[in-house]
Image (cartoon, rainbow, N blue to C red):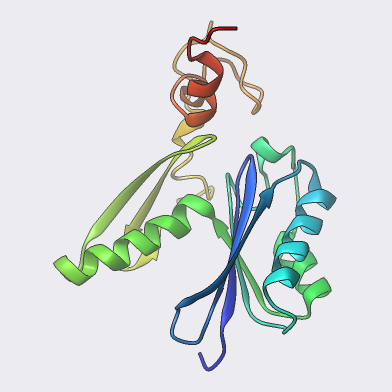
Length: 185
């Protein structure tokens, strides 16, 4: 790659972008709250990308959940890569955020162990895992191999944004801890 690129992480509560030079050195960072809904997510991504660079640089986007179905951001179907590419006139690659982090972790581990299989557990707004073999993220048949947060563990448990009850994520995630932690209120 002779040019830099923009990397964007979409979270349930924030969107964060980085501008990398051609040697993958971070040049600039931008962080702001994320907003639910398809057009808001596209607008947020474009805003962050334009703050970071006025050039049509390649953009990598990490997004929670299945790439076109993001429960925590109230998105049922969204061709995110196509929409952002059309607006920014740049190539866009969209990957599950935890898979993207797992690939980064695997690259670090491979410096130590050559050919590692890495399982990366992410405890954020939600709960998910990424699996990397041979430097490639595994997606599974349905594209949701690491979506462990939506495994139902208690049919009488809390309602989950995915529509089920008692998902693991409702009791074992950053969002759940924030909601359930005893406070003075």
